[in-house]
Length: 325
Image (cartoon, rainbow, N blue to C red; front, top):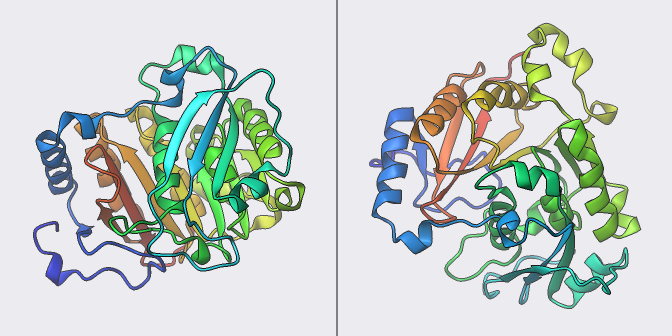
């Protein structure tokens, strides 16, 4: 409970950094009350999000630049004194070209520049698209710790992890984290997989591409499949074990909640960790999701992490019981 932090010390099972201000989520109604009370009292400027599609939804590609300061290389430990990153979005110049080695070169120069191809048709058909902007903000926190920002996932702690991302969109996060992880599997609907792979191959060096994948997972199809037959039809290449599941801004429509939770439940076999980032839109949707998550089989423990401002919430969770899916 948010009001009783002393009785719930940060979980020892989470191998990364959880701020002392985090709290154990025990009741969906209480969680919604706390989150939306904080949102209501926040400055309107801090509660505004703008998606990449809002920058220019007519451009097929955008340039996303991170000024990383003294962010460590994948082989070194993170520096707690690194300055905050500066994320800039701009149209891609027609004359620019990006080599397959740019990601590595830019990291070495304390700058990460990504040419991000967009789904223009999808952007035109969606209103209020903010998913990629949230990923940019999350990546900023991941890559550039500062004195006033706790690095939730230190890059040095990612080296042995297989990350499964649900609802990857453009695949931006897989590009950002590629140098640091053991394996990264980005997933979305079949129609978006070519776009994810295009962004991966365009921005990631050949030596890193061997550990970054893009594949389709249809949450609705999985949800409608008998639970005892899911292992046969829904498995990753090599039946790989997943260490961390990421779902960033995937919850914006009530119809997605049950399929997403079924997908999380299927792939999160103890001790798999789950990290969900949500933009606070409808309180009813937020309540339904967190209530559904807490009620999943396997007895879940979920923590709320106030790290990205009042408009965004981070939850981390895991099954506390290892049961058969």
